[in-house]
Image (cartoon, rainbow, N blue to C red):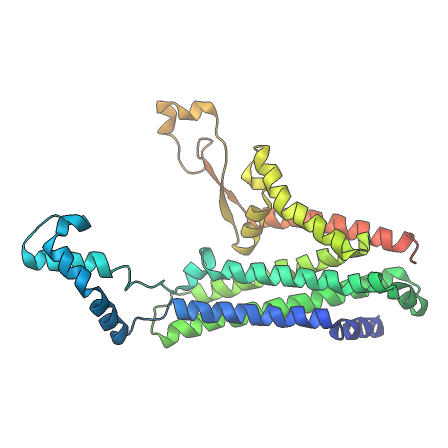
Amino acid sequence: MRSLLAVELTRLRWRRAVVLLLLLAVAIPAVQLAARAWTTRPISESEIARIRAGAQEQISECVQHPRRYGIPPRIQERAQRECERSLLDWQLRRDALTLTGERTNGSGVGVVAVLTALLLLMGTTFVGHDWNTGSMSNQLLFEPRRGRVWTAKAMVVTAVALVTAAVVSTAYWLGVWGLMLARDLPVRGGSLTDSLAFGLRGAGFAAAAALGGFALTTLFRSTVATMGVLFAVTVAGGLFVAMLGISEHWQPQKNVAAIVKNGTIYYRDVPQSCYRREAQQQQREGSPCDPTATLSAASGTGYYGVALLVAMGASTISFRRRDIA
């Protein structure tokens, strides 16, 4: 088995499309980190002076006619201060850089999305090439035990995806942390650990996506068919759930968030009786009338875990029993 794993790893390493996808998995998060560093950079004194000089004419007009700018007329000193605040504050404000913010609504989710998409494509492309070129039959001449071949390919794809995603995610969060230290920004205790755990959960999900892409492509024997099915599940599936009025608990995006964020909040329907005045006073957290509920990481893992196991089972059975041209 060890020699078979080495062969599959070599095959993966020499596939140009796979190498390109792995390079993109490193480059795009690096660009995202550089973009966050730029958009959250401190405002220099020269920038403040330039902005003030550029707005001086507007400030003077605002002081003379404060009502035009929505400012009640006051004494001259107060009008000057109010006009400067109204006209300059939004230009002098930059996004705050915090580890917590990057995990909740920041670029951390974007890094997980990029890694998941690229590594899923890697798993699909790797085995899809074997089917498109017909080399799968040649491979089975050297190793006729199909179960071993399927397992070796799956292990290599998953391991490479997991290592790549884990290293990139860890480097990204250490980069954000180092950037905050360089700018003397406060770092809450335990925030770095939470961020690294966030990245590792995202890496695990990306590796599972790569394995799922491999399994589906082995089942359908077509990269295009796999991409069509995945598009239908991720996009059309979510719309279908929403159109039927099914709880957000079953939305694919919510379950991804539950895994990566170690739990998330979703909205649910409550009984009509909860809209009565006396019931509204009992809408405590966790009560039947509370419109929010928690979707745990375990629930999200089960949601995608069952789908992955079904795909792997169908793929294995098909690979073992169907003729290979």
